[in-house]
Amino acid sequence: MVDKLKILEQKKAEALIGGGQNRIDAQHKKAKLTARERIHFLLDEGTFEEIGMLVLHRSNDFGLDKEKYLGDGVVTGYGNINGRLTYVYSQDFTVFGGSLSETHAEKICKIMDLALKNGAPIIGLNDSGGARIQEGVVSLGGYADIFFRNVRSSGVIPQLSAIMGPCAGGAVYSPAITDFILMVENTSYMFVTGPNVVKTVTHEEVTSEELGGAITHATKSGVTHFACANELEAINYLKKILSFLPQNCEDEPPFLQYSIGNESRPDLNSIIPSNANQPYDIREVIEKVIDNDTFFEVHKLFAENIVVGFARLAGRSIGIVANQPSVLAGVLDIHSSTKAARFVRFCDSFNIPLLVFEDVPGFLPGTDQEWNAIITNGAKLLYAFSEATVPRITVITRKAYGGAYDVMNSKHIGADMNYAWPSAEIAVMGAKGAAEIIFKNDIASSKDKVSKLKEKESEYQTMFANPYRAAERGFIDEVIKPEDTRIKLIKAFKMLENKVDVLPKKKHGNIPL
Ligand code: HXC
Image 1 (tube, rainbow, N blue to C red):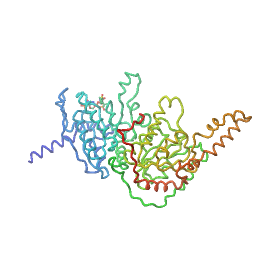
Image 2 (cartoon, rainbow, N blue to C red):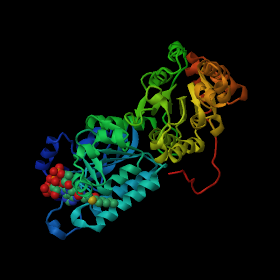
Image 3 (spheres, rainbow, N blue to C red):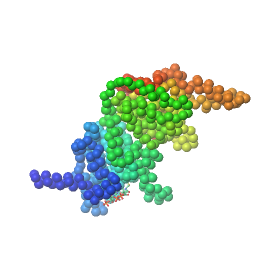
Image 4 (cartoon, helix red, strand yellow):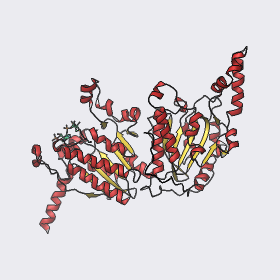
C-alpha cells in the first residue's frame, strides 16, 4: 500500500504543477495568478474539493501524444464561499494556453451538470487561448456542450464569469450567456476575432486592449458588467455578487437580521434642486435610503444615464434600477433600456425584489436612436418589468414623463406600490412642449407670442407638473415626504414578502430581442 500511496502522491504533485514552473513564472510575470491560486483566494479556506484532477487529453495528432498534463488545463470542483456551496472551474493557462480540448470541456460540463442538479451557483475563471487547435472539431463540440448547459442553467442557478486572460473566438459565448461578466484591466480581453483578423478584413488597426479590453467592454459595448483593477478585486466582486443572491431560483436571497430604529432620513428633503432642469446624483438618494454602504453597482461605466445594482434594505437583498438625472438628464435610450431590462430579468429570475427610483424626461429622440431600434430596445424594459413577479416598488422623485412613465415600473405594468415625492411631475410631456402643441393657435394669434407661451406653459405646469393628478387616479399609492422614504419602503417590502404572482402558462415569452 505504501508504494501505491506514493504513486498517488506523485500524480497529485504532478497535477498541481500544471504546465510546469517556467510557465507558472511566466504567468506571474504578466501579473496573473495561476488557476489554483485563483481558486485558493475565491473559496473559503480548506473547502475546495477537486474533481477530475487526473484527466488526460485523448489526442494523438501533431505530437500531442507526447505532451500530456494531468488535469488537461482546467481545475474543476466545488467548495464554499462564505459558507455556501459553489461550483468552480478555473482554466490553467500554463497547459496549452488554457485551450479547450474535448476532455477539458468534459470536465467543465461535469461540474455544470452537478451545479444544476444540486442547485448551486457556478463560477468560471476564464484564461484560455480558445479551442485546442490540434484537436479540431471535438474542441468545437466541447464549446457547444458548454453553451448548451449555460442556456439550460440560465435562470435556474446563478452563473458568473471572470475573464482573467484571453477569451477569444467562440469562447466568448459561454461568458456572454452567463449572468455577470467581470474582466480584469490590462490582462484580459474578449473578442470574436482578434486584431489581426480585424486588420485583414476591415483594415482597422487596433490593439487587443482597445478592441476587447476590460475598459472597452465596460464602457462601449457593455459586454462586461465590471472592469476590475486586478484579479483579487475581481475575486472579491464575485463573492460580493453571490452575497446578494439565493443559491437557485427556488431559494430566497440571504437575509440579514435587522431591527427597526429611527429610519427618518431628513437629508432627502433637500436633494431635489429647486430648478427642475438642474441635475442631481441619484446615487445620493439611493445611498440615503438603503442600509449603510450596501450599494453594489453593476454596469457602472455603461449607459450611465441609468443606475442599477444590488443593495440591502433592512437586511433584505434588493435590486435597484434608477434613472440618473446627472447623465443625459436621465433619459431612456437604447443602452440604458437594455442594461436595465437585463438587470430586472436577472433579479426576477432569482427572487430579488425590485426598487425603482424614477426621474426621467422621456425617451431620447433622434435618427440614431430610431434607426438603431429604440422601439425594440425600449420595449425590452417594458417587457422585463411587466413579466417580473417579484415585489416591485417605484418612487418617483421628480420627472415621470411620457412613455417613460409607463415603462419605469408603473402601476399599470404590475408594480405593487408606487410612491411619489411632492416634487414629482407626472405628465405626457414637459410643460413647454405641451403648451407649444395644445395652445398652438392661441400662441400664433397672440400679439406677444413669448408671453403667451409662458402663460400657457405655466398653466400646464400648475395643472400637471405635480403628483396629485396621478394620486387622484390611484396611479400613485401615496405622496410621501422624502425623509419618510426609507421607512415606507421597509414596511412595503415587508408587506410584500409573501407575494405570489404567476405568469400565464406558456412555453416562454417572446421578448423583443
Ligand atoms: C493549443 C495553444 C492555443 C490553442 C495557445 N496555445 N493557444 N495551444 N491551442 N488555441 C499554447 C501555445 O502554443 C503556447 O504553448 C502556450 O499555449 C502559450 O501561448 P503563447 O502564444 O506563448 O502565449 P501568449 O503570447 O500569451 O499568447 C496567448 C494567445 C495566443 C494570444 C492566446 O497563444 C494565441 O493567439 N493563441 C491562439 C488563439 C486562437 O486563435 N484560438 C482559436 C480561436 S478559435 P507553449 O508550449 O509554447 O507553452 C476558437 C473557436 C471556438 O476558439 C469556437 C467555439 C464556438
